[in-house]
Image 1: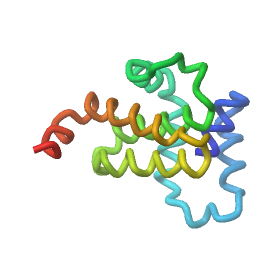
Image 2 (image 1 turned 90 degrees about the vertical axis):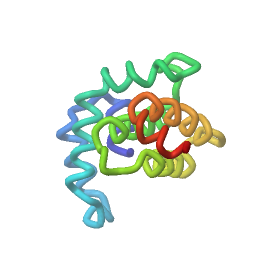
Image 3 (image 1 turned 60 degrees about the vertical axis):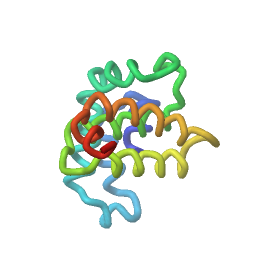
Length: 131
């Protein structure tokens, strides 16, 4: 999330941002393959992910806080590409990130947007859970 936040704010070189994050304390505990997939996938696919997210937003993307935007990108990427992770887990992790780094009620917004995105991207999984 921190790497995407930096990318959204500065629109810098993703390779530089990735190298910077790799140097941070505690990075060794990270699942590097998943981190790389998220950072590279979200930045490379941001236009498509943003277009999908925009269908579920109540405001323009430009009005989202960079933290909420980064969290929503991660959630949308995982909903679309990490099918081995249950959609409820994706949403829960995004909500926890928003609680830890975002504004007071940002986690509620993230939850609502990703819940709608899950219904679109994982319709069968969502329907099966509803039964």
